[in-house]
Image 1: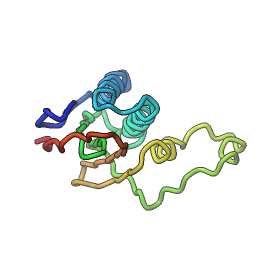
Image 2: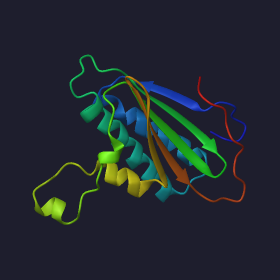
Image 3: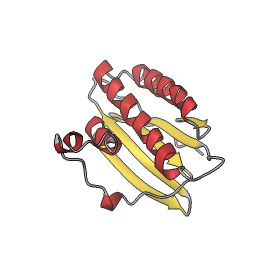
Image 4: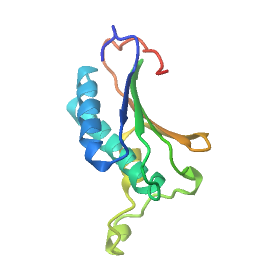
Length: 156
């Protein structure tokens, strides 16, 4: 994904956990191609994987068959943006409260840190309900480099 690209990369995977490796592979390759440093690429990979896992575990929990997950990956000036779009139950973002550490672990809780990790890895995290059963989690990673690419188009 470089400045000569005209369209963002759009990826649709089946709503099954065994396809998350594909998401990690594509997102990681595109982030490296965009020129992000290794540490920032790793953070993006963790955040996108957690976002997709949350979709499978929560938004699609009681759905059979599970709908797909769509990703739209694009460069904007100084930003690497990943939209994770799902077709499941909406999430009440206003009710989220981050876990308290180390109490979270000491209380025996081993789950419930995905959104916390996403926020730690990305500069911006924005959730939007797009319709009765369509949601978008926008993950934005900012970075500075000497020549930022031109903004890319939007997925149709």
